[in-house]
Amino acid sequence: MAMFDLDRLITDLFKTTVLPGIAVGLWLTDLIGRIACLVAIGVFLVLFVVLPIIFKFSFALQKGILFLTFITYPPNLDLKRPEKSGLYATRNFYIDYRDQEEDIDVSIAVWHVLPNDLVRRYARELHVDETTLSNTTLPTIDGRISNGGSILADERESSNDQRYRRIEQILHADGFAPSADDEDRQRQLFEESLRATTNDVVLYLHGNTASRGAPHRVELYQMLRALNYHVIAMDYRGYGDSANLSPTERGVVYDALAVYQYITSITKNPVYLWGHSLGTGVSTHLLSLLTEMSLPGPRALVLESPFNNIKEEICNHPFSQLYRHLPWFDALISKPMYNNMLRFESDQHIAEFRQPVLILHAEDDLVVPFELGYKLYRKALDTRGKSWGPIEFHRFEKSSHYGHKHICRAPNLPEIVVRFFHAYRNEQY
Image (cartoon, rainbow, N blue to C red):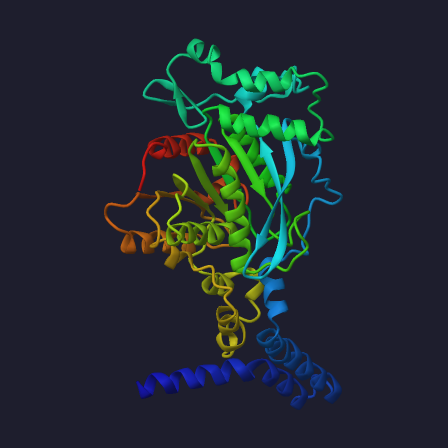
């Protein structure tokens, strides 16, 4: 043990002194002047000593680096008009709730994207050009076509279903207009579509940059709606046009809880949770919280590009390349975030709920390395109960170039998703 400690001490000493040592060496050999040497040492001290110390004691800076709410794209995005992002028949609205612990009012911005089968049925009333509707070939299971998680045995039988009657009454009411300006009628129509149809619901929780309107997220919504799922996408506090509040791990989890409870207050249809990147940490924490509160959870969980915990993600993130080898990295960067409850410990939370989990990860993911997603998968296999919902892992080869954001473009993803959701839509764990 003593030899190990000595080796560690020597290694840390080398890492600490190598850069300023190079500057001093260049000065001693007259390759640079004294002022240049002092400037180089000063830059080293500021970048690698002063800034980490500031980070350690600044909770605001820790949250800013983790949540990156200042990164917004595309420019001039009008989140109140989802049609400008290519999402027809989509409602923009806000869910307001009281955060009791922080004693503040929170407003969460939400999009509700209608499934394509419903839009196609009422394209004229919704003012949607049918030629713009995607003609995705729906996956089949046991010889039958999947429809938003359910399986249609007979298309003609579905066409005469009385469940659409209330939707039609709203659409054919005097003065109805599907525009965003008629907020009350929009609310009636979209909530009734959740209540009356048999289409399953996907609640999407995004990563730590931009908003619900980021192009790669819109691509995923379009894929899911083409499979005839309702899609509910939200922005946490501090993101998009949600409440201008500084996010925390607890805060964004409770924001997601508020939206989940809104969905389940309207429909009894199966709900699935889909988290991407930082949203995977929010998702696992939310499911753990629902279990702790003894509340019914979603039927299943999809984790796209997940990490196992924020500490290891920080150590592997491209932004930390300059700092991760510093001897004081853990003391000044990792531990302060952990102590301030910025943890997102999916490797702990995944052992605290029973729902089935589908993990999707690309081998060429540079933001959240593939190894972290696989590490989470192995942890889940080791810690979850044998009678709990299964864990599935799908890797996407490096040659496909999906990276961190574009697994939604994988040709086989629709079948993977439909088969997973259908397998567990009627199961309770």
